[in-house]
Image 1 (cartoon, rainbow, N blue to C red):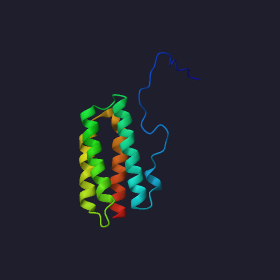
Image 2: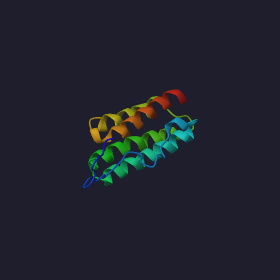
Image 3: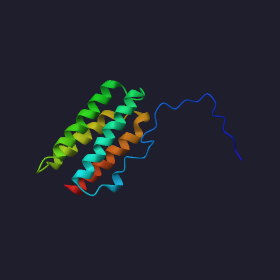
Image 4: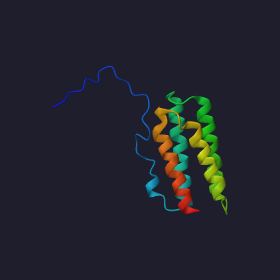
Length: 116
């Protein structure tokens, strides 16, 4: 049996630690918007924990908000939503500490392709 000494370790941020973001449960546009809003909140938490630079947080949140805005239109433009989510992913993709967020964005991209 292995024993791990975790004294002195500090966890600043864990992606979706509460498990409230669930792209697998998305059935429609409203569900997608709801999960994207949760993703934006998660990005804020990562920024507050100083895992992600504040400028990157701003850029990613802007792109996700644009995707949300487009998704809420009566006739959303699928390509515009995808472009905003791809831009968000590009801004954050090289940050190892943000891997879970990138995965969330990629799942959102997959869902947009299916829903619209």
